[in-house]
Length: 496
Image 1: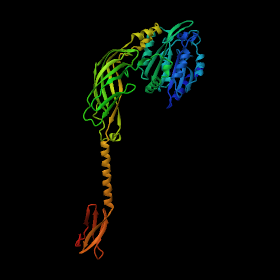
Image 2: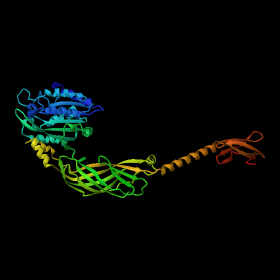
Image 3: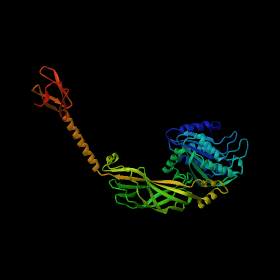
Image 4: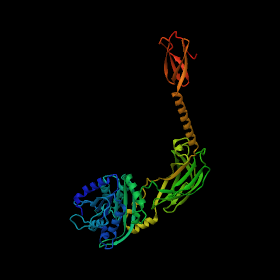
């Protein structure tokens, strides 16, 4: 086990390693306070095995981690206590060996089991191990938060609640309540909670990428319960059926995205079409008891309202989609014209413009589902910490967006006309060049004697009389000849 005195340097070193341009940062916090006694002493406890598998699933080869135990920090026994810090995914055997020696912690110089401080552990991970930089903080806990073993658990829970919901560092928080019945020598437990907190926007992207990969779901099959955010991507809008209109063709792509193909030569605003959607609640375990819905279509910097029927949500529970009818018209005022560079480059093919349908929920009221409350009561009986799932009162709206792929079909006419014009311009330029460089002849009469002068466009030719004195200049252009600087009294003219 790593000595406690090197905890801070290890955390700082790990944060420096994870600050590189590649790989994510992970801090895994494993609770070993007194309330966790059955998870350590039950011979059949899968606790350490679960931690091992989650670490293996969560980390990519170029990620970095700090693995630490935590309870409550006291003089002589700091918490969290680093067990392992390295760049790159640790081998499974190394993780097992590291966790094998981990036991229930006791207070310094006493046989009393250590207490728990969840907020201290998470705060230390964010400010210490990550040093405020992006990353993911994982928390394995039985949900008992009782520093100094006091009974003011409600106040302690509120502090933890505020850290998650009101803190600016944590941008996304998920919880996985797991059934894990264990019987120890002193206590027994029914469940375990695995939290993951995404720190900073980059941490959110890393968590989303992990969930999209499916690696974590192979270990934890329970659906994650969302703690934060509750005002973004709270619903999903999936097109179910869509009609076509003159000059506009609609189709639904895999993944529920909408594709719109438009004839760019279509004049005026395309007629609106009827679209039926499935509105899905993406905020497990919350039910949207009521909300008002507004929507708009956005394309090329323009926006057009989308008429919805109904425009209210009632009792929208996760997993139970609500049908939604709409009248959709795309804003086309800023679409590139047929003579634009984008259109000419796309002639004969499709020019793709990214668009979206934006959905706004206002006057939103959320309720924690009764089934989830019952499940939490079964897994963590008598523990008030599930109150952490109570939605903040200031969350009364949310936003969601459905990407729309708009493909503009431009004909070849403008391109062919442009090419023809270019060739005509080039031909005119070539003719001008030939005309300007070919030799020309001019007849000039000086003192009654006609002369033939060979010249070309743009040239100024001096003219002399029989005595060798300059009497004038012949200026030649593409359009003819003129005399200039004629000496006073000189007898000079063009032609015979």
